[in-house]
Length: 129
Image (tube, rainbow, N blue to C red; front, top):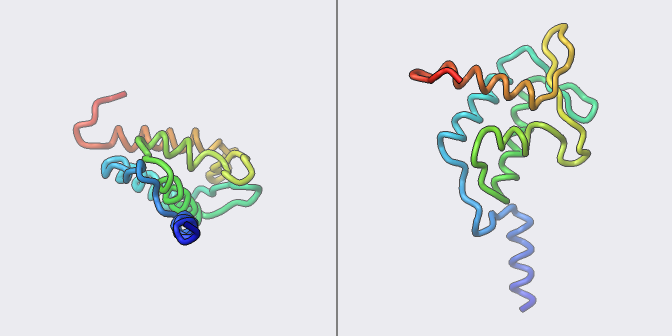
């Protein structure tokens, strides 16, 4: 019995996914990757917990958060990814922000949702929303 408890604890510590969690659908993951690539390629900075980071650091951080979330649940949409991973710190609860050039900082949820709209509109055969 003790061995089973230790095995379970080790599996949870290593981030094993619960039996009900499934991988993020390929289309959703592709959209998330495209959104994060857009953030990375921008000249914008990503603010979290009082510090501003370049797009590359923001992308890496958000991919780590995505991985942790995928260990607990299935990410059903890019909007859900934005809500669960990219809008606030899971540690402090403080909202994330994006600031571009001389513009005022924007909540990351708003910035990422706007960028998602642009990405979707640019898809071949995309209907206007």
